[in-house]
Image 1: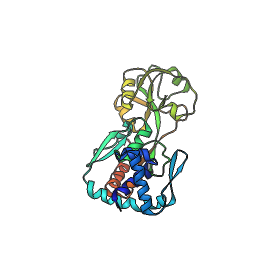
Image 2 (image 1 turned 45 degrees about the horizontal axis):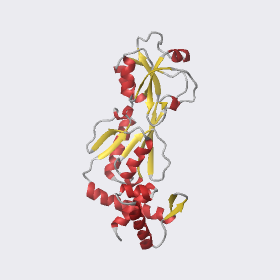
Image 3 (image 1 turned 30 degrees about the vertical axis):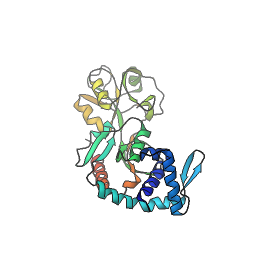
Length: 278
């Protein structure tokens, strides 16, 4: 059996799309369709069924992918054992990790679906973030929760050691905008209805804290950055209303489940991120 047929099959299985698999493999869509048809003929039964505009794997495809994945992983490890692993995550978590041998730590893009496509294609090996993934080709491991509070200057003119709802609504706010959604980070984490005066918007948590440091404004801050906030001369206050915590997860492709190098990096990240933050 042609080894490339197995690669083509796994690509279509992972992407759930002949078009996306063809793009990933640098092939035309007709060539990929032809390759899958030849592979099905060789295998002796259909592996994908067309459902509307999508394709769904058959039970035979699920079984075959389960059996072939470890074999392809062993080949990948033999051929690419020296390749640097690419690990992505948000800035608020990256700053908690040390440098690791054989690992490139990089800030993840703002748009979730692009990140998942990069994992599917192999451009990214591992993601840690607070996103929900409902796809059988990915593995999700829970790491823990990070509390969320608010930060302002110690010498704020009217906010003391606690933050009331009245003070929250009276204060100026600097907002961290989520670039893949037309909302701020705070609005995405609470069901509370409130009014706040936005005086500035920034795209990164570090810029958020630096902006607050030089103004009398208030900003959201995640537990992983409580220490940095204090180093910048800011005080961290509990929220006057419920905010959903940051649910940190490791997300990676199922093909890496038994890969030793990948597993070692996962364990190292979990070790560092489950330690006390302060």
